[in-house]
Image (cartoon, rainbow, N blue to C red; front, top):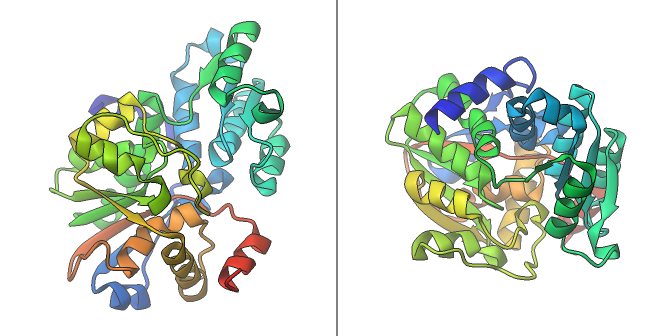
Length: 316
């Protein structure tokens, strides 16, 4: 996997944004630590997902790539797959739920993808995507369950280490585990002994349970505002990677996530979506204690419905 990470860094260079690292004196004081925010909310399509999608496309045989891709996602990966395909000049079909955030559906369509709503066709999203791949002879791009996806996501943390040096702790949100897998891999390659922690919503703590038990566990009907972390389980691949390279999982409830979002919006002027705020929620709530430590945080995305966010901040 270390070689895949190195190759992924070459592929994304000059295509994915090298996103900035922000610091905040007020955040440092609130956490009792020196915190470095890797701003993937400022990445292309507004989330880290572009890195993995672009790396996956670059790894495909040119003939397969030319036929196009099909993928499935509730939002950020959908946009990433659509843009990566558009930049390569190939067709993309994305399977999404009809309940996906309207802004993410509109952005995915705006990047030129055909959108199919699996719940309106009475199929699972994976089943519909696999059927489309077979019928059209295109390649299925999974949202996290592929080594090139995980390696691509790890390029964000690799850049963070280059920009700020050694870290004592590094936090990343967890849905299907692709970002945490790549982040933990990058930390291992950096060789600083960094403790890598995955942060999940409290109602979707399947990753932590799987990490501790060693077998895939599920969280059905996850009720959280963190739409990017509603994936019911890790995959065999991402579970193996996080058990090898990561160190701990914690979970935060939606109230803590909203407080972290509000802090980031008001104090740092960074628009971060709920899933992206999970690591900061873990710090501000004290679920992760890192007194006097150097702490890295992957702010995974900034695609949020502003009307919804206003309601959350107002207590609705």
